[in-house]
Length: 80
Image (cartoon, rainbow, N blue to C red; front, side):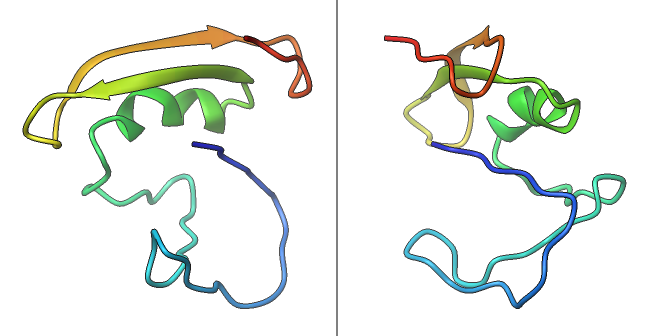
């Protein structure tokens, strides 16, 4: 998964294979029905932190079994 943020944009959200219609949310009014993994990493994205990592889902595909995230110095740093 890749996450991109922006402070300013123009245009209209477009659909993709994963999402019917793109939606934009104010950081102070995020939806309550986020994926379980989003609650883990979203606060760091909103704080401007750069990281890489993974989430492993439980068999119910609703809850996170395990996860690991590692800080990056900058967005271009590569981790193998």
